[in-house]
Image (cartoon, rainbow, N blue to C red; front, side, top):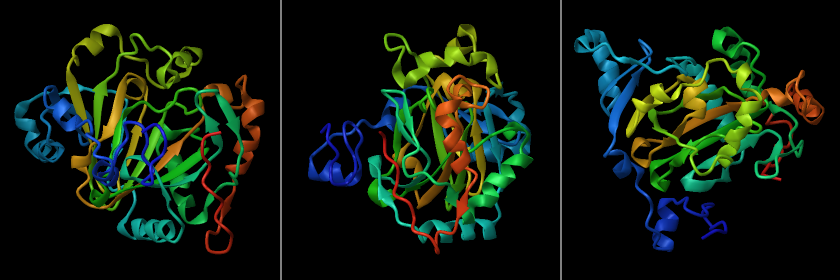
Length: 318
């Protein structure tokens, strides 16, 4: 099962099709998390409250959460109605006019960015030559979000989740060698939830290249949480709503000290998200590795017409 299957899954990653074809018994993270204390994030007041159901917690905001003070959970921004219905339709029209590629865990993807090898820490330009023109306004709008100051997009990825394929993504932390602090998602077509679980690097310090964060920790937007702050979330999960047409930015402690996932149960209709990544400080203009990324930044300034030009092939890992 270490080799890619016809559906695109490999290893422990599965979808409904390969579970049926190969009689694979998947890890049900919903069952795993049921033993944990659950909190849900309220984007109206930027605090977390007890409860698994994010819709119920958001609705409770109008009544002051029944007097519950909530708790701080720094490192998350959810901007509601960040794109309009007309803008969503325009984005989806462009996205669906381009070819999709299969991905793991029942997803499909369209990837525009450089070629990366996370194990060897190797960066190549590959086929990257910029982004589709119809999505340019999204990157332009980042400038209106104070938290996104100086964000330089170097990867844009469309990801499709459907209940028919049992789409999901297992708990993980985005690579810390190449992808910078801010993990940005624009959510389209339907509501969903990001489920956060506390991560411990004990016994595997190099996983996700987390050990490299020490090189640029002094440049983070928000300080990482100390042990005492993390201890209160022992055996806990935090549920972050991703409403339709919203913007999610994750940084600081949720970025580096929590794994995030999308549960199969939280995909009830077709969902498409636009995911954006920036480089780590090492690959920025003042960084030690800028010579390796300068050409990527140059290509990232270009936007092309997907109807007039051939869509470049998806970059894989080098």
